[in-house]
Image 1 (spheres, helix red, strand yellow):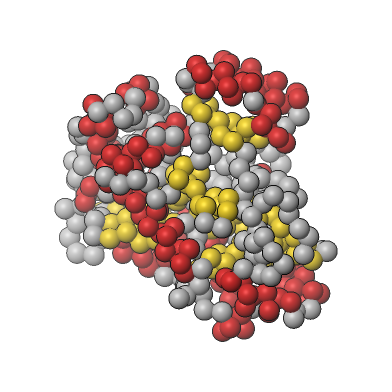
Image 2: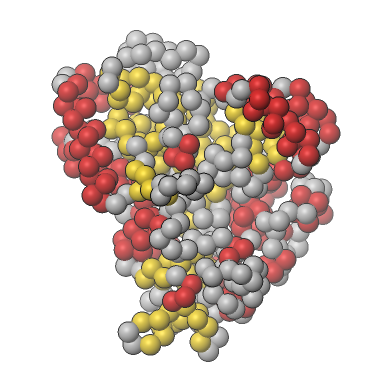
Length: 475
């Protein structure tokens, strides 16, 4: 296998022998015909295309519907590693939910000076319409995706929190289904924890958060912006898997103080609306008046307790990368414990000393927009040209509060299958968390995203990255 330099390789570690979680897999792959494996890669692409597993790329002149490249070499995590990761993820998600309840009610963390008040008051993701609103079960973040990076044998760090509308779970499920179909003998040989019950768990978790007006089994619907949205496949996939209705804004109206969907038998009330529409477009009466994606008056019904919206409006402030830099303080404030999952060191460019340092070291750092996502609006200093750095320097000086900066991490590598054999590529991990009043479920594994270009640290599918099946081993 082609060797990586100065990066922790999750399969081989620092030696010539595979690490313990990969030993059975290494025995298997070492005995396989490389031509058969390459053929299986082609089969996987055909499977994904037939299933319609695509995403749309914005900002292109041509219709840019694409397959996300899938690599057939799994990423393998031991049961012990996953147990520690799960504890850190659960602690973090509990703290995020407590933080959201606090900032929309008593704001004790601001009074205590642990988070600057201006970071909330001047934040476009903070919704005044949510002040004093308590969602059913006090759950704000029903579905959370925490992006995790690994930098060493025992070093896992939280890179980002996705508390609004985290995407990618359909790829996690389809990746596993594809592997099961192509390599059933592997799953007989290696005991891997299942992920297939996620849709069932999602349906149960959302149902547990139904409003008080709910009578009987909660009616759940998935609100999508429509077929042109980059994650539309996932919206329709999850609705189908849950046995829920897939609706658009024009399918809904307010009837007798409830949100109701059009059916062949008239309008039926909805109890839980799993929305995949951003806050700004959710309700033209309360937010953007030009929105055609949302439902006029849905926020009024929500505030009166007539419907549950998952995730709650206003959760986007927990996605803010400036807020992220305070997560160790947030975790300790609400749990009374030190954060199990470390943060990546972060410079807040709104602070003069930090801005000065970042401007002096742009070529060495990764700079991100505080509200950015999908790999857009960021600078990866070591991979940028002098012209790109100069242009970003001007943007940074013009709007410093819009950016944070982080060191270029030594992300771990996992092998991918290339024409020349196995070769290391950088990865991250997005575990998916379901939050209900009585429980938190973390699907064992999550979505591994992989930078398919040699040396690249950018794993986002919109920037050329691919995905892998993530295996968490049984004990």
